[in-house]
Length: 169
Length: 390
Image (cartoon, rainbow over all chains, first blue to last red; front, side, top):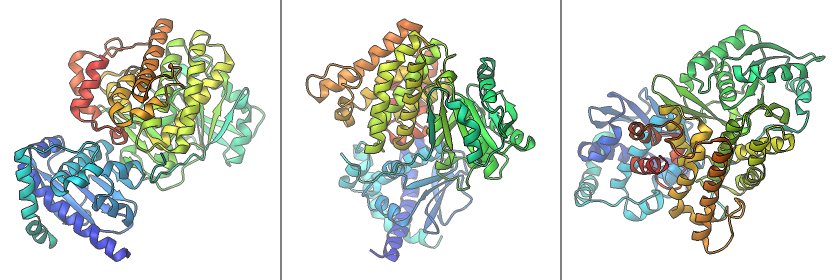
């Protein structure tokens, strides 16, 4: 696969993650509880080194807002060391914890907060990925309640609209 | 099983043995260093161990530029920033950390502050983010447990947030580790036992955590053997230099192992116990280790079973029985050390109060080590471990 193709996969996946973060944070009590300890206005970014795609997200009240592409003065940056590492996580070959354990990521900022962000990201991925990928990427595959399954359906239905809306940010 | 991908890194030169300290001037010279800042604590200085280091430099062109002997048991970013300032003020060109984990980690972080050209350690928070080469660094451990002399991590207490923060970077690895048994002879039995359990925890967690690999496994296995053969000997007779040297090596081997495969839930909860209730790290690790192993039985039971013969457990039955036997062997060692020197076996004995358990659990789940634990570490999991260990 060419570098350009990998970059396209990662850019699209990050856009989907950003849009899903917004949608899930509006409705998921689990995600709201997870981000409760982060300060209001807290910004985190996920990106690829050395100058690959990146997105920034901000905590506003008890929700997450997708600020768009690039680094927007983040409190914490979670960075993939290269495009291959990002692709492996984005397509669900490995989970974020495996990427960290395999030294495929770098953290700039408070590690405790990065752990919270990483857990929040896992919650959002629960609504983005199918069961087969979650079995591979999570330490314990989450069991979804009927309400969570409905939310997952809602996320999948609205994802494309969210991504289109966020593409210009 | 071979991991699909791993990294292993340990460039530290190891000087181990009787009189190892006497090579210090030669090694400093090789590093191009002339004027060292000793970072230590009052206990180590009071025990005459700094004098030993200074005597080793006699007759050489190397000198001690200054001594910082105010390192507290849980060093903070303020202490680190002061040490960095002191280093510059005194015109030093290398760090000589003489002490346990706190002194070594303080010196590591001060080195990072100086080399990265900042004045506050908090600007450097993160994992694997330091790029610049650091000043020469020599570690002379006076305990046998932390393994900080060969690890890429440093743990510093954040006084404001009341949490222990881990800094990780391959740049933090010292240039040289000097294991001289004379430097650990003055450790009292209680500290010998606690630091020894710390080393055992490093080796066991390294053996089953997510980044385990054939290289780190070999170090972990060697470390476990040395701990099982020598820890109680050291507690029984602190002047046994051969056993002391063996334990210093055990801590070093375990350090190399966990520096590469990292630790898991025992360390997350242990760091949190230290942050919230000031339980010494080795004591907390010793108490939590069997519960942490049990927590991971479902995911890595067969791997834990492989440790049974090394831990002196009867090697019979299937993997499930052997894994349980391995855990029981760790409990037995803890109980024996409790009888020998009063090493706490429960969190209650270690001074944790029940009302703090939920706070500890909340702190533990945000510790970086949770990532490397095979089993998911949720608030409920951390709480369960704490309640059992209480």
